[in-house]
Length: 308
Image (cartoon, rainbow, N blue to C red; front, side, top):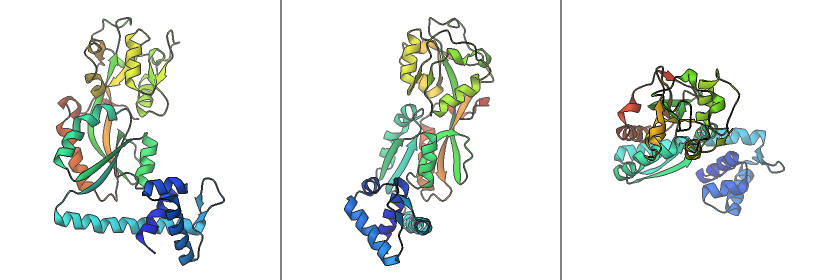
């Protein structure tokens, strides 16, 4: 038995597909399959039921994979201890970020992170919240950045900042001359929304659930804020934006951004990582760096947190 074989069976369990597991492990599929077959022969058990699609572990295989995960974790503990003893920040840090945070946050700190920690390879991918939690549980990523609270068992939530919601009200809109909006005035049927699966959409719907008049304009859902802003600017309705997205808008759009009166709704953005995570020191260093490059406005908690 080898650590490599354990990595391969865990990868197959994660992806439920031999080819995808091989790709994730940076080996050919025949190499991965051969090593798993050798492990099965050595232990005289069948780890995976290859007749099922997607592939699933056998009952004995499930128990073996669970133990393999523990062994891989302990192996990583030893490696991490050695690096801490040397006092070095060296290795790979895998980061998942929700799509409604990535464009406004990543450019604010990644260049500085790479300059400060040149020996850390930062791997970043956009993930929706449910996929991020699954990836954290399977050790596919080390840390996530998402809207909280989520209250997921075994997952630490370490708040980074709090973003107030801002209204984007174009010149064509009846409320264009208002200096600010009340949350009670915002009608969900008049909003251009992100499409399903985005937690910011869920937060907006919770905020506006009391206001459900009939829509008189375009019912539009998109995957990004840029599309919503451009459509709103052309008179297709209004939309809500997180603060960092709003302040990054092109100057021609900024006159249409209006605050929402107290109690100002907002969202909490946190670092997420497993309680057993070995790279907590790296994660906390990244969190501190992020806070250094954020506007003071988002470092204080808004009056009302809208849960994702």
